[in-house]
Structure formats: C-alpha cells, structure tokens
Amino acid sequence: MRLPLASLIRNTLLVSVISCFFALFNITHASEFSPQWSIKGFGSLSVVGTDTNAIGFYRDRSQAQSITKSWGVTPDSRLGLQFDASFNEALQMSIQWVARDHAGHFFEQNLELAFLRWHAANDLDIRVGRMGTDVYLSSDYRNVSYAYPWMRPPHEFYGSIPIYHYDGFAISKRYAINHGYLTTKMFAGYSTNQLISNPGNELFDFNAPVVGGNLTYEYNHWRTKLSYVFVHPITDTPNFDATATTLNNTVVNFALPGINELTPYLTTKHSNMHFISVGGAYDDGTWLMQVEGAYLHSDSPLFPSQTSAYLSIGRRFANVTLYTLFGIAHTFTEHINVPDSILPNPEFQQIHDSVDGFLNQNGVDEQSISLGIRWDVYSNIALKAQWSHFWIGNNGAQLWQKFDLEPTPDKVNVWSFGFDFIF
Image (cartoon, rainbow, N blue to C red; front, side):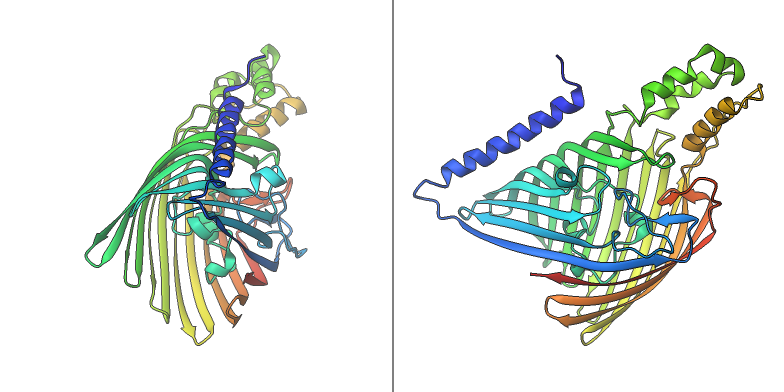
C-alpha cells in the first residue's frame, strides 16, 4: 500500500531524526566524549476573561478552547521542560516539550524542540531535527512568558501564526560588524500542524514544506530582524473530497448554477504562501520598546493575504514594569460571488451559506490597545496583569471563535491575570 506524500515525508524526517539521536547515543560512549546535561523549566498560570459571549478569545489559532465571559485558564497557562546535553564543545542536543492547550495531538504537537546542534566552526552552527519556526523576534521564547513583559505575544501579529515548529535543518553564520553581531540563517524542512477550521471548528492537518531565512543584527541595546519564509501546503482542508462531490452534483449545480466552479477555491493544497517580517527591539534596562510588522501573500482565498503590526513601549521602575501595546491586523480580500439558490430548499441554502462562509467570512480586521503591569517578585517569578480593548471590523474576527447565530461585536474587552516562572 502506497503512503500519501505527506506521511512519507513526515516519516522520513522522523526516522532521520531518530537515527541521529541513536548515532549520538553511540558516540557518547567513546572516551573522548564527556557528556554534561541539564534540565530547565518554565511555566505560566493565568486566568483570562472577556465581556462577551458572542465570540471566543484565542491566544492563537492553534488552540482548541476559547474564552468568553466564563473565565478560563487555557489561553496562557503552560508548563515546559527542556533537556540539554553537551557532549563536547562542538556537539549539543536539546529537547523541549510544552504542556499547553492545543487542538491537535497533545504529545506530538507540543514537542517544540528536538534537535542536534553542531558547532562546525567558531561562528557556524548546523542544526538538524525539530526546531522553532524562526520568522519573528520572539521565535526562541514564544512559549516562555517570563521572557517578555506582556501576558502573551501581541494578538494581531502572533495570533495568526499557528505554526510553532518544523522538522528539518538550519544553518546559521555569525559575523562581527561595527561592534555588533550580524547573524545570517537559512532553514528548510517540513511542518506538521493540526488546526481548527474557522468557520466550521473542525480539526484538520495543515502540513507543508517550508523554506526560509533571516538576518539578525544585535548592537548594544538594539536587536533588529528581517525574515522570510515560503510555505507550500500539500494537504486538503477538512472534508474537501465530500465538499467537492457535493458541489459537482448535477442537482446541486442546477439549484446553485455554476457553484462547481468554486471547488478549486476551497482547498489550500498546492497553494503558495510568502511571509515576510521585520522587527526591532530596544532594552536599556529602564526603557524597553519592541515593534514588528509583517505581510503574508497567499494565493488561497481560504488564507487571504494579510498585513499585521504592533508597537510596545514599557518603563521599568525597580522591579515593576508598566507597558502599553498597540496592534493592528487586516486582510486583503476580494468578495467571491457564490450563486444563490433558484429553488426554495433549505438544503441548497445551507450549501450556499457554508461555501460563502469559507470564502467570504474569513477575514481579519482588528485593532487593539493594551495596558499592563509586570512585577518581578523574585529573580525567577513575575506577576502580571493586562487589559486589552479590541476593535473588530466587519468580517474581521478570524482570530476568534465565532459561534453560530451570534452577531460579531465590534468591541471586546479582555482581562488577564497570572504569574510566570522559570526554574
């Protein structure tokens, strides 16, 4: 029996990574190796609530449970463990697993890191295995809430990036330039993701080869980053075969003239997505600022092209940090005409509404302002509180859970309280 391409690629990568770990296990028994290892951890426990039951709040679209007026702990609460092993000056290994709310397979999808790192030269690193998708400033610590002042990464920017990791390789080179350091990086691999469709709220596989790279420059209190990644999905959307069969049915096409012509628009398979982002961060110990902007170009109407950005400014007063955060996200969509039913039959109307929802009700039009406080109680524990006010435009709630028959509010308040820790 022939394996699907997605399964074949995923299994090949998995076997390759496991083989590397077995090889590493064998060579560590050689006398010239003296392994040193450590276990570190991090976590967050928080509660989040909103002022509406009309739509549900997600931290990002990888999550399964949303938050409404009924407060909950799922958006930001998590517990992570990281195992690091150093076999010599050139060879290291890292494994990180994070317990958090995820719509997909709990153990596999929450395995964030599992890679071998080889220092091929003083400033040259090669990594093989599972790594974080390095296309934004917080790539290395997106799950480590203790590492940033906010309750969570800015919603408009990070909420639409559900891809946390990929399986493959990365090569990075570091250069000393003008008292600073420039790091160049290129990576390639295969990303396996399980997400919830919106609308529809159905679990589906979003698997894709990824290729990208970035430039990072660090100087004194500044850090800037320019990133690009190409994504080519090779899996279908939920129930695509059944949907295609329905839309190509003779009776359905009589009732909804020409609706079969929309079939190619209802899948992301073999579409192309280009994501580019630029960002900068400043932190002198008193003032801290971070800004990022991104543009996603997509040729699939199911994931329309989008731009997003945020600006965060904060001020430390001893062990207390006050901050404000502004965010904006907007999709560029063209309305796709879905033919109306010429027969007064509720089943045909339901088909019309379903297709129209997938093609024309999947936009992001959101702006927000947040005010927050962080109190570093100890060197490894921080208490946080944050209020966020969101403005949501027409057809703009794609980053939220939409409930049937509920109109989308144009304003939503979100309150968050919690504490972060590392150990």
